[in-house]
Image (cartoon, rainbow, N blue to C red; front, top):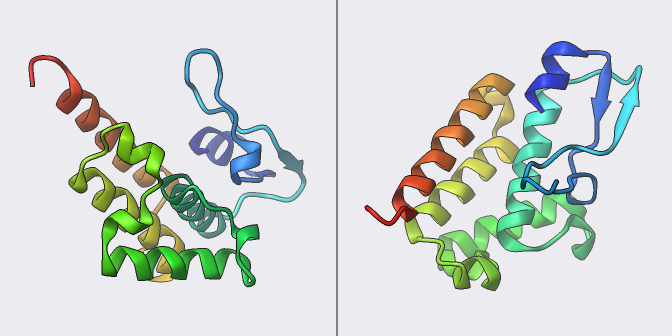
Length: 144
């Protein structure tokens, strides 16, 4: 997400679960692009937040009457009542911790709900996700 926004600002991309595929190495390349549509930092951050919530909850906007807004509201409601209601069973079985779930949902909500207040830049999102990923790798290593 960071590379196309910085290197090709005139190229937009669709950040939805159907347009992100995993490579053999586990890298998530984006597969849908639009030339001449341009990149909007605010829109990309919002879409990333929605994507993160989709992955965590294993739900898609099309599952709800009002699409993305309803998905976000559903996650927020279940997150506040009982965080585990907002987490997909597959993630729970894989051993996601309460702290990891909490950080992922909070960050997804921050990106999807409050983009005008936080004014994240894509580089900041990249840094936050990288640090989070590295911390989960360390906590799952045999020495920790």
